[in-house]
Image (tube, rainbow, N blue to C red; front, side):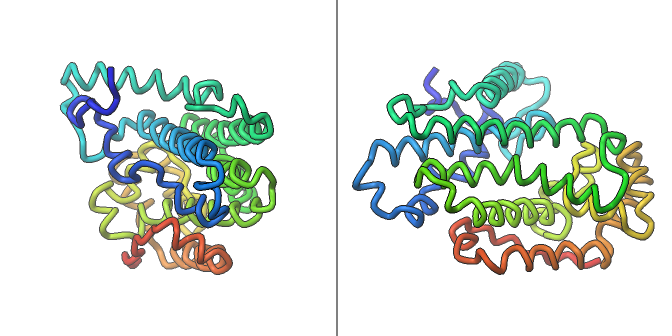
Length: 290
C-alpha cells in the first residue's frame, strides 16, 4: 500500500503528520550546518528522514498506548480503524525497537552508525521508563520529592534529550551541541507537559490534565504536585482516577504553588536557548490561572 494514498479516515494518526509536516527538523539542520544541503544533499535528506521517522514513531507509541487519535478519529467499531490501528501498532513497535528499520540508515556512512545506535538506545530507555511508570503508577515512582524530579529529568534527558542530541550527532558528527540540545529538549518537554494544564486552547482539545491522570502518565506538573500541599490527592488520583479524586488532584496541579515552580523552571531553562526555541516554533500560551 502506498502511504501517500492512505486517507485520514483509514489512518487515525494522520494528524501527527499534519501537525508537524514533512522534514520538520530542517530549520535546525540549516542552523547547525547551513552548507549541508548543497554540499552533501544525500546526507541532508537522510538526516531529515531519520529524524522524521524516529520522532513520529515515538509520538505514535505514546498515542497508541493511550488510544489517543487526535482530530482524525473514526468510530471504535469501524473495521478500518481496527485494521489500521493494529497495523500502526505493529509498525510503530517494530520501528522503535529495531534501528534497522530506520529509513535510509547510514549504510555508507559508518561514522554515523555509532551515534545513531547509542542515541536510539537512550531514546528507548527513556521511553521504557515513562511506559513503566504509566503501567505501574505511583508504586513504580520514587518516594522523595527530590528523587522524583531527578528521575523525571533523567527520563526526559533520555527520551527527548537523546532525540535532539541525535540531530547534532548526525549533522556535525560530534557531541559539541549535546549540552545545548539537552537544554532545548528539557524546555520542550516542560512546555509539552505544562500546556496540558495551563494552556486554555490545548486544554479544551485534550481535556486538561485529567487524561494524564487517567493514563497514570507522569508529567512535570504532576511530579511537582506530588510534593505540594494537598499532594496526597494527586497520589490518590494516580492510584484510583475516580472523578472525585481527579477533580481534587487537578486543583493541586493548577495551584499557584505548582504553577510557579513550573513557570520558573520554564523561564530558567529557556533563557539560554532562545534562538533554538524560536526554530522549534512552539507558541502555546500558558494562560490558565490557578
